[in-house]
Image (cartoon, rainbow, N blue to C red):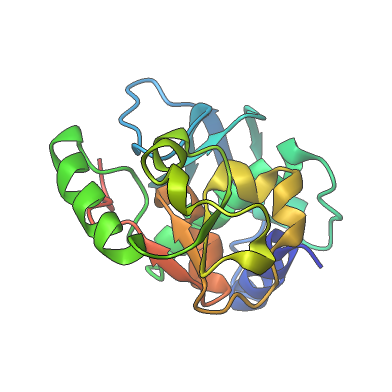
Length: 202
């Protein structure tokens, strides 16, 4: 099972019988993007019940849908995975199980980079996602496969792309989800999440 499908199954059990699954979810282009330094692609805003969350992706989708669309769905296409991950971000924000819904402001980027450096310096790392800045800065620490890594860094574009198929549905402490776009899946699968200055509200 893909990790996003596992997260969908868990959020489905959380909202079962609450009447939330048939309420509207709006997925649209973010008009005033403030993006995470490690996320790439189009930045979308997903709104549910007055709570919004971000999802960065190379496979953007813009639609009005319902959480129930993803329950039991195979989610084979990257755009479907993107929509599901975005809805999960908004739903976990609405349910107050995740508080990292949007990227920090640029004045926090240096502080964030310092904390990330303390976390991964000296470790062998494999990147599941584009995160070009990390790959350039830690080029000497990169390994060719996740099996060789001390730490596996995961961004949303990696999670929704082909590399995401390698992620276990129950991530261990070697796997670190980076940025606000991966927050909902990280919370639901009990994964380690790194986004120290992410914001709940814009």
